[in-house]
Image (cartoon, rainbow, N blue to C red):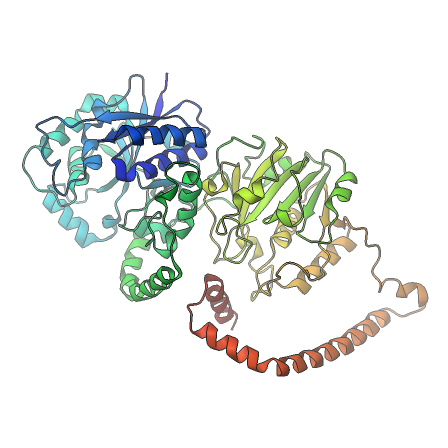
Length: 594
């Protein structure tokens, strides 16, 4: 017998999105007894068969319940969408034995751990919901209160997400009141949402904003859980707005192997450019709205290492669910060694693995196909850098290409990190059901790294582990400091600074190298000049390096002169097209540094 359930209402047009909404919740929940229900309005048998196919492909059990409006129901023709109007009959569709139901609009996507909402304290109220976007604007909410007859100062909730206490709903007759309003002949600007706000006036509990992050407030919620695409342009549309393009990839991944593979449209280059220009045009008008929204909704902040974002615990270990510094210490201290594996083509990972015991933990980064040819058999976690500056496997839709190398039960999960203010976490649901934690290392990196550069993922992990003061030996594999001849290397990182940092840690015994490079070539000079005074050898080294660098700069100047016409041509082409997110971020950093 189920005690908790997810409900969504849909017609044929939104059915694929509705199924994705339910699937995204299961991927972000540890609940084992949660009932998944789609209330279908006028669904043909073919579409019901497509739901069964979706279930098989994605390993879920979504039940379809047909719904037909009573013959005397007004409003089923015209601008009232049947799938939203049907919500007013939800009390008649609640299954026996259910204690709580989480209702979701079809255009909802879960990107974080949904479990806590089922245990939310409703303080005796019938439902829990989140403030609507309009409540940030006093003049608008005041007008809404007057039109609906709500008491001054009343709150107005968005009906895209609400949690029902089934016993309280049955006892209160709230939906009966809502249906009476529907039949009253009264006009409502926002249809059934207005009706529900009247019916539940004084009987709903406000929930945290992260449980219904509407399009207009997305920039102000740091850690969303349920994202609500309230605009006309949805992530699966070709005209999806730029800020939602990441979510389009999530829908595509969920549907690509089903009969609804064509549901997600791809944007052309022309559409992307048009969206960019349109966004620029909206910036000025958004300034005043931004002030109101930020003041009202603020930002929901999480821990540095947060468990607010786990994916489904379908793969990996339950041990990988910590968030405190003490918890991470206990997690890492289970292992004898922590081997950080850089994506270097010179790395012989097979040989390196044989040099460490079975209880060593291997930490991989981003595009592991650079170093792995087959499924990795040892204990491992994957660090995914999903900010605009990193190797973004989510944005590039390479999650499946990377996760195929981690198929054993020794794969513990994914640590999605951010190290700079411009970076944004990827939703847990973007990682194909793998266990996911989010780590905010940006506060640690602030003041710790040259301000005009972005730290590599490896550097950020080493600095964080150093702060944790872990017992296992930390080993760097492939961190040679040599430029890759095969893979593109970005100049956004300060490679020299990082190399010196690692060298100093190695000299103090805090880390070791898997390549057994031995002592520095400069250390050998001490053997030849045992009577050298303090600093004498270092001064000679500095002078020699300065001479070499001067010579290198002369050669670079010559190359710059030879390629001047090529650079001029390249700059002309660059100015003719919009800047990328990475270029815009670099421009902001340059201004901040100056």
